[in-house]
Length: 244
Length: 244
Image 1 (tube, each protein chain N blue to C red):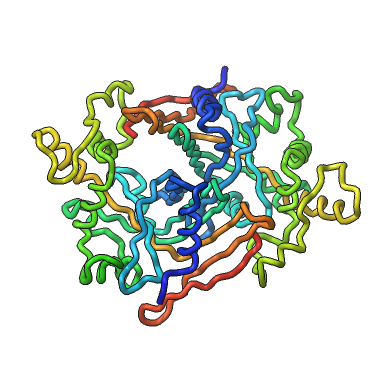
Image 2: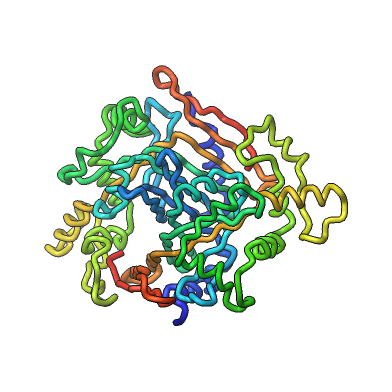
């Protein structure tokens, strides 16, 4: 079983020079009042389960204190629109989200990883190229934390997102940078890092459908890949050509 | 009563050279199975009601046959994320959508324009800079149709979006261009134009909240504008500075 065709097409599109640094996509969620929400996220990586390479999983990050986390935990169905402006390609992922928080955060038990899902397979058998055996989510979370910029890491030790401020200047008292794990030297850096690690969370999105529209090609093309359950580890993608 | 501050900030951001041609945003909707959807749209214009300049309305276009139209008609609450990559600004609009179809389309009576809304004010008193008196939606729809490229106009006389094709080559039999209204000369052009005009629709989004995040400024800034009902035509925007 190999990687799905949509993943090959996406990798080809994102590696085009005209799509350089096009790592921002929009994630749509639903809140408890049945209202849609959408915001930009930076794509960090695909995680590919060792035993389930048919389903690459999108990885992005967030602050556990944002409303979208509660939304994803109460309604795990999400959609992602990834617009690659350079080549005029849109990849839309419909799927299921899971949030990996600090192990002591109350949300940690609510990861929403259903048995048999690609997310569960990832937990059970790690990533391709990684170690075999159970994936250590906390290790993974800390690894991703360290790949972020010092400025980005500092964003997770701000006051809770959405807190009302009296002026923009209030932000000048916040930590501007937070060092990597193991590299905090001052007491202040250590405290900020501990706070940032409390709030930093991974967002994983397991795709169930991928809708690829090519507006850079004339006539325009659209190809839809729908995931089909199969016995064992053999999930398949059924591919149809559709009117854009 | 003048135009809202968020509109001034948005205009300033979109007119920066580094944001040139950043006219694509993502619109999130909810379907009847309570699933979120999101896709890229091209922003076409703001419509500003003559008698209600406090509420500029986003204008974009669509094919009346797409699932998002049904979604917007059954649940008018939508959210838009407009990421301006050049300056690293995000404008998020939470609001109410209305769809303006061909006057003989069954959806025409379902425009969902509530009394007292900015959309209703726009219908009643036209746009700034336009004629006074009731806005002629069909005239407006045809005007916008004519501002589209010939290639774009042809996209509305394709088979219904989502129709399964046997190959990409099927698309080669479709009209590649459709002329402006009044400029169709052949019978084929006339038929294609009539079909495209049947399917072409305006999407209007009336904002109720605008959430502006400036990631290009250090420390990052966030300003949220919430619309507050007021007597007469005096809706106001309450502005708060918040933690991003």
